[in-house]
Image (cartoon, rainbow, N blue to C red; front, top):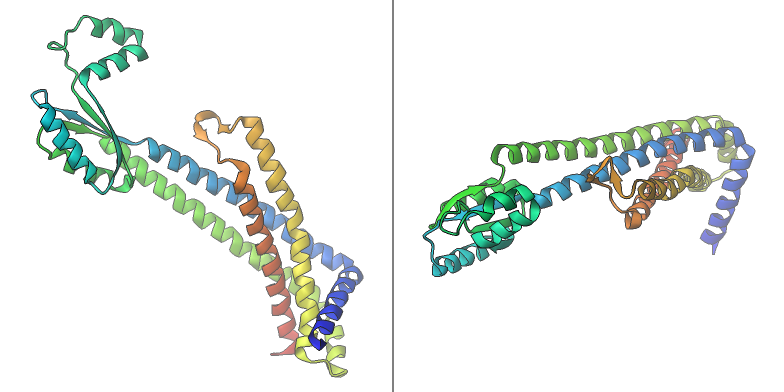
Length: 299
């Protein structure tokens, strides 16, 4: 019961302190708001870059061309081998007749050229179009398939795909580092702003110590005050995240520049990101207040 009364009194004192020191509280909230807005932009950018690279990686395909002399039993054997490969997610087998039909449907030029070729004259081959689970292992997987009997050749973009994978990895790592760096900067700015707020009230802390208040009872109102300032500072970034990103997504049709660059869908992305912003604001506000009070209590 005593603990509940202390908590209730601390919450009351925290709110009174925010009102009493309105200018300093406003400075802290403004600092939190600005830095969290920057973090929100970084989160949006990093998650969309990750989404874009993931979408591109899904489209990477190995094409294996079957030798003309392969029989139906040889095709079945190749299917069994692909089924047993750990990095093969799925595959699509097409006869050269199906490949010809598909090419004719895609282009009038192909239709005109291929129409004059009989099955015996056609240079097309039966093919396997193979999706892999891990694109980082696509080269090794292609090499293994190339070694299968009755496989004439294997194509997957070779050098271009390898360069794309390296570029995607670099972009992912870069965006993660950017977000982490911004969070660290946010922590630093908020902690120092709140320290300035509390340093202006060191006389108040001294009086509380003189009248016999325990260290915990002194710290608690300031910690709650810091959490409240963090909560206030996260409101605008959260509203901006939810409504701003949703508006931008709907306005752009879910794409950036072209349909190649697909944006991540707002739901549930905006709500997860908003929770992250809220936690950063509240936790950093709490830690900033605690750090500042500890300094004046010389704990």
